[in-house]
Amino acid sequence: MSNSTPAQSSSASILDVRRAMQHKRRKRHVEHVDESINIIPMLDMMMIILVFLLKSLATSANNINQSDDLRLPRSSSRDDPSGAIQVIVSRVSVTVGGRNIGVTLRNGLVDPAQKRGGGSGFLINPLNSEMRDQHEHSLALSRATNQPFRGEMALIADQEIPLRTIYEVLYTCGQNGFSNFQLLVLKNGAR
Image (cartoon, rainbow, N blue to C red; front, side):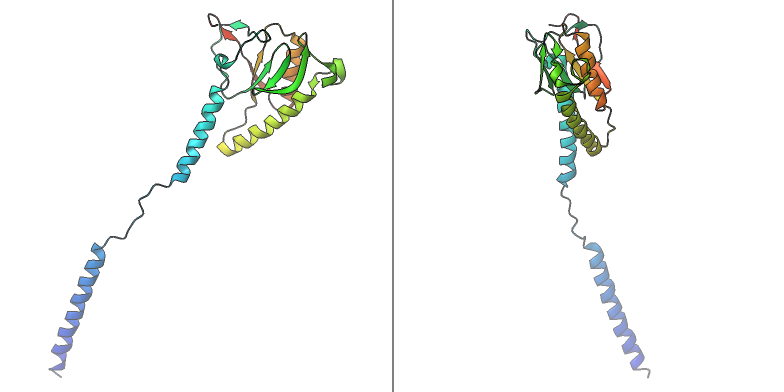
């Protein structure tokens, strides 16, 4: 029995040494870690920045082309209507976001056939449907960017437009959730 005990202990110690060496080798061996950049979140971030920049650059008084039908009044205000939807009222038409929506004006007044209630009505039908679409689009955008919907609009009107037309446009936009409005004017000294 004395012969078998030292043999078992020596073989056990050799196995233990081998196991310890294998364990040490495994410890030194570093698992491959994927160090590449996940580009999907970066693209999402760039898209949000792009949308923000496009919306901010679209509502500057310097971007409005003035013509005989559209002359902006002058003011000393310093507020900037960035992020707001542009509603432009010229002497002959109304456009939303640079797109003509089919509202025609005669002498600065909306055609009574295009208003709910005729000549005494305040709701302009083509503008109402366009602002409803803009409201849905703005809500979807605010959900996608996790920003609250503010209902901002920038009203850009010719300086000779009758006040009644301005009231009708503001009323129609307000009925579709755009009640936070700014009137766009030229700064004194600007052309």
